Amino acid sequence: MKRVLTYGTFDLFHEGHVRLLKRAKALGDYLIVAISTDEFNQIKGKTSCMSYEQRKEVVEAIRYVDLVIPENDWEQKINDVQTYHVDTFVMGDDWTGKFDFLKDYCEVVYLPRTENISTTQIKEKLKNRR
Ligand code: C2G
Image (tube, rainbow, N blue to C red; front, side):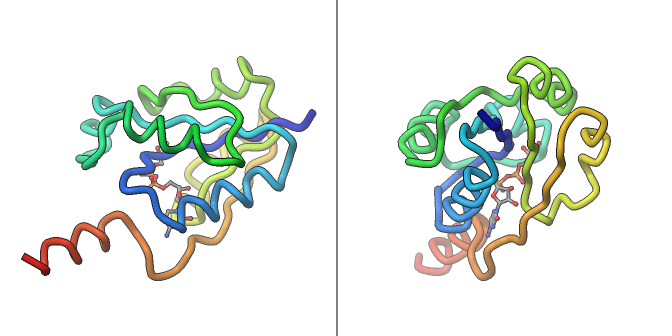
């Protein structure tokens, strides 16, 4: 049972998120997704339109996802990898290199982002429609 772990906000869920989760799941048998809490988003300097509970409900409904856990801070990743016996850590390549410290604990994979879609872009489109 190969276990995969990834992190994110997953606000205004879109195909970029789906394709990341689909590819992450394809790297193993069991996919854990750590979703940034509203409090951690503040630390990240991100304000999400959807609350943690809403974002959690959506991601839990994705066929590729087996477990959703909260992401509360930047420091929890090593502990999460150990607690959940993770074999592979995955992030989009906008994070390339940022989590290489996890290579001592598991495989680290950065996947190409999906072009031409982002939560920011969606927000911009909605703003311009007003
Ligand atoms: N993503 C993607 N393609 C996009 C948009 C996002 O592949 N067009 C990927 C990101 O690279 C990330 C995941 O989808 O791996 C979730 O994206 P965000 O919700 O924007 O996550 P982020 O705010 O980058 O949080 O500790 C890590 C952070 O929590 C990551």
